[in-house]
Image (cartoon, rainbow, N blue to C red; front, top):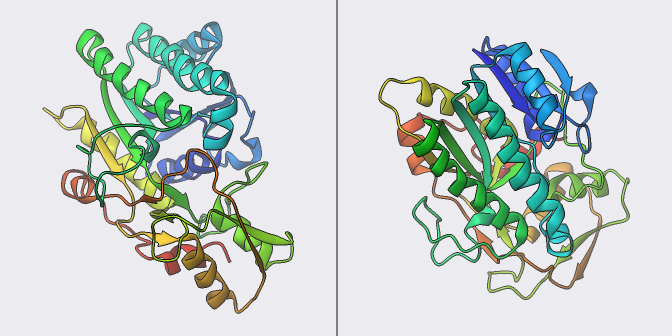
Length: 317
């Protein structure tokens, strides 16, 4: 299939470009390079394009005539979304509407959407399944939930078929060493810990040590980026099946680890000690987020290649 990968120069997108190419798909990356890196697009064509530019979107759709779209392009910093919500609603919601209109105008009806566990807010129970109440507590999570609601309307009105994946915490690197995680600034826990262990940072900061968890620090569910990328291909296969309906799936490992546990695991694996600084909580951070991935495993036949935190950490060494 010919697939548009929106945001394919970013962390998860670039890994998905590689895996989709290796699976035999014709991939075209669309990215405005605001946070992505063109040298991370190792396969397929690249089109410099901003999803808020409707004329440019229409041009590339008419040029390439894709069969499906995978949409990774979104601002995703929870803290930043609290102080600059316009940036998040404009790009994540208005930009996605612009993209969806280009799809409908060009008769492209298969869509894989990168949603987020942030749509759930503070969990009422653990693990979090697909039917869990949606009460996002920050503009980032609200922007993702808004798009999920938009997709339901586009399905009814225009015949769009979609899969929404609610990510928990993506982590790890391409095991072949071709791709890595390069955010600027870096905000993800594992690369920050590794940079500190390798002497590139002075310390690791823990934001909050008074949560209602075993050690007082936030607990998160970490899933390897390649497992996420493979899930997107499984989602596309699901949409291609006769009689399949649009659906939402939670994507996580199914296990939770506290910030302190991740730090200790890295220290154990690397045999390196480093400075850890404990500070105040960040606004918008739930105490615990752990996925139930049973629905994705059952319906998409997903099998995790990196099922443990240790497996994930070893790919970034």
